[in-house]
Image 1 (cartoon, rainbow, N blue to C red):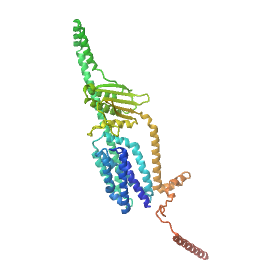
Image 2: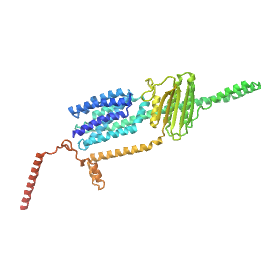
Image 3: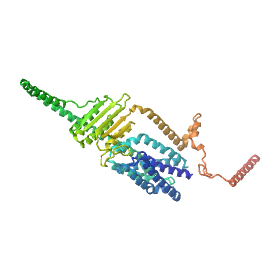
Image 4: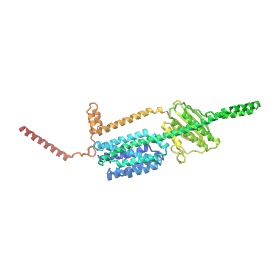
Length: 521
């Protein structure tokens, strides 16, 4: 049944590209990227099919690095948005995971008798299941990691490349004989270490991103603390000098210099105004961010008008809200610094509606029209770390299934976001989790019954459960392909049937003679 083996190989090669594209960030539009990816991937697929039929299936594992890996690497490197360690790590992750699943299904097929049927069925189920899990649980956090972190990826990419080579060198091809015990032990250890290593790497990257966000939050709180300390020091000075101010006012009033007294009082009121908080927000984390950027705006000569209507407790993570506020206000202040002083005016609003939607907007002057890219973000010069703020804002908005908009109108740049409450997600999430759990249970049961026949035989003996188990047991079915069944034995022709009938008649005559002889005794 080599046709089953070949179909499973082509199916696996196709899904290597699909797994990669789920986590991929393209440089161009998705239409252009998918067209180029499937055109290039289709060409490589045809080339590898021709090589496989000319030199045999075993050639794929030995030359796949040159006929599949390197051409695909060059193709997606051209299409990738990130041309650094982020791209190479993702490439190693998707390829290594695919080869790992191919090796696991290969071993399961060998345990089931090496008919290639388990090989095909397990790959038909395992690859889509892995893609579903990638799309549901890994896609958003991984793409968020790529956008927020742009350092430290090369080390993890090298680790991924080493594991990729280990899997390639220790893999046992489908038609190759099983290695000895020591070589097989090395292969199993590599397969066990691979998922553990990648899980550790992804967890480390996520912790690194959280640490970065916490450091950013601490920096904002440090600015807020310094501003408060300055105000407290200014208040102490005013209290210490209050008797001098009162003496000055008393002297002006005794001289009946009312204008001078009023002017002096106004100057004191202006100084006292600096002691009050410029904005109030019930949530302490958001209040720290707003106050920090109010001070920064004042130092930059910007007027920041705030309108905040939020309670103390919000249905969103505070770190995500600080990412939106911090990046948006920082970009607005930097934009104002390049404008004349009379144009340095920022309008900022934040409101939690009755249906628990958080509406946020920032408006800052921008006399020159802004060009927007295909992703809806402003086109900015390609500099390291530049232009990442709005990408982080959009990532947070996508996390909550909200709305994100950047636009330019009448010399003003406007950023608007709407965050949807996370309470609206669980119903859909539960349905997806149930479907995923059901698929996993069905896949595990199917593989267990067909890879371990003793378990299937035991369960089929149970009166009520037996018919259901027989439906799932593939041994009860006969698969035919070009006069061959699932065991690969050709059907007997007419001549063979006649020979078999003659043999059966001879055996029957011999049995009859033996019976007569026994009776005569």
